[in-house]
Amino acid sequence: MSELENGPAPGEERRETVGVGGGSALGASVFAAGEQLAPEDLSDAWRLLDAEERLEGFRLLRLVDGEEFFLSLSTTDQRALLDSFSTSERRHWLRMLAPDDAADLLQEVDEHKRADLLALFDEPVRREIAALLAYAEDDAGGLMSPRFARVRPEQTVDEAILYLRRQAFDRLELIYYGYVLDREQRLLGVVSFRDLFRARGTASVREVMKTDVITVPEEMDQETVGRVFAEHDLVALPVLDAAGRMKGIVTVDDIVDVVQEEATEDIQKIGGSVALDAPYLEVGLMGMIKKRLGWLTILFFAQMLTVVVMNYFMVKIEMLSLLSLFVPLIISSGGNSGSQASTLVIRAMSLGEVRLSDWKRVLLQELGAGLCLGLALGTIGFVRIMGLWPGSEAQFNLFSWELAVTILMSVVGVVLWGTLIGSMLPLILRRLGLDPASASAPLVATLCDVTGILVYFLTASYWLAKVLDPSITS
Image (cartoon, rainbow, N blue to C red; front, side, top):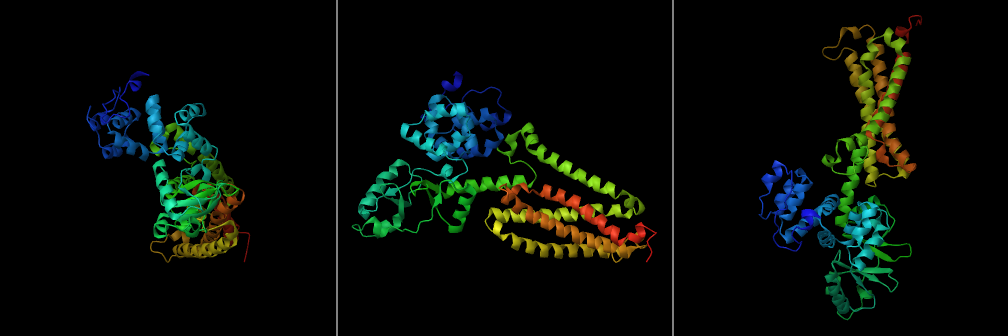
């Protein structure tokens, strides 16, 4: 396998530079051949390096630094490094991972390669990873670690402490709590190390444990798990199956990554794009186009409805060309208010502050907010057209009252309508089982544009009827 197979063994304390062809000037300036590299220097330069330079820099780390650095990398970066390693190196670095982290990495590997990587683990670990792979990646079962501290209810405190001490050598995910299980692995309670050390040595674990344990089912969505952590300020959550058997724990460090991923995905969707499945600079030109073109095409066709509406009212626009001056003002007011409302409601839903059952409260609140906001903005437009604003144009003076009322009523209508669309659409999507983040700001703005123009010209047709149709007399 070329020079990678013949490279230094993973256990060597000092690594020589692997010869790479075509390295950039950046890589040459960061790495000095044969010299050890500090992990913080490699971390600072990591995102700017290509795959060959990353491998070169990684091989220059001392073993202890390399292990810490490898564990700090994202799953995507770990997988990319593994692709460059020999089989013996892959075995070493894969066995550094906890079962849940190894399962996350294997989730990103092609199906035909997954079996080969699984074979590099010892049989007990392989069974743990295979069990985790059976869960969906975004379920509590897919996040959990099967390595947690266990104690029996009938053990004495002294026996439990000795038992936990032996388990500490098994690379437990969390050592602060012991979970009390019966012989069928059902969760009975939890006991902290502090409580154990404070209790009498002859007392039983059953006497010391706490039974009011907050748990999550193995199929619970990761976003909901994150809300449970936030609501109860926990360090870890036990994961139970339908029979009450404990399968593992989800720790707060795992859920921090999940919260960041969920927030990033929601923000990207709110911006009118499909969520990126890789860091921005690693998506590539064609990948970026694929992620963004679909929504832009949908929005473009939706905006074409604006042309249909304006064409319908073209006669009135020609009769009173001043109406066209205020089209951007009207549609932007509705789009902006709708985008505000959708963003606020989507975020509130993701935080668990708003549920489907709260739709009436949301509706009433946005009705009040939309009416007040619309009146505030409409009043500014009214004052501007009535000539009370410095530098008002003379062409408004001929029928300034009718035009000012038209703008006032139109702005109130489109802002009110925009807030209702923006606040209700995420709730409707959630009710249909879809992601509320799909109610992106561009989508809401486009809907408000089309309906805003309709509201504007219908209002103008009423308040400017005598101007647009001279045959109408008072």
